[in-house]
Length: 87
Image 1 (cartoon, rainbow, N blue to C red):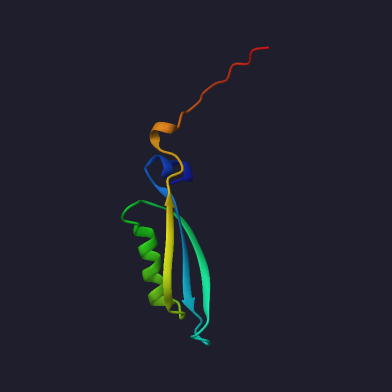
Image 2 (cartoon, rainbow, N blue to C red):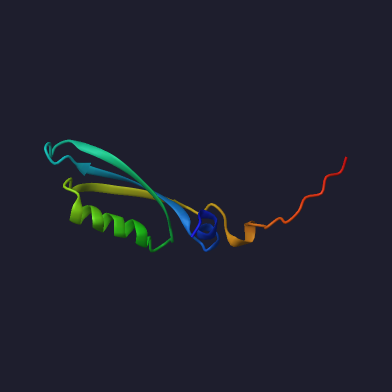
């Protein structure tokens, strides 16, 4: 699906900031920013990525904060097929 198709189907842009402990220095926190189109309120893609992180990445998560924003909805989008210019 293209980004426009995702937005028309109700997806919104989800941005998550993940704080995690460095494997070699467990008292030091680092951050990672993740973005993808996701459906609220379930946020399946975000939860899938967090599960992937826990299973694969060595740095354990400290905390995750996220924001979700619908950029357009089906009622706000118009398909324009032509344009008229008046001089």
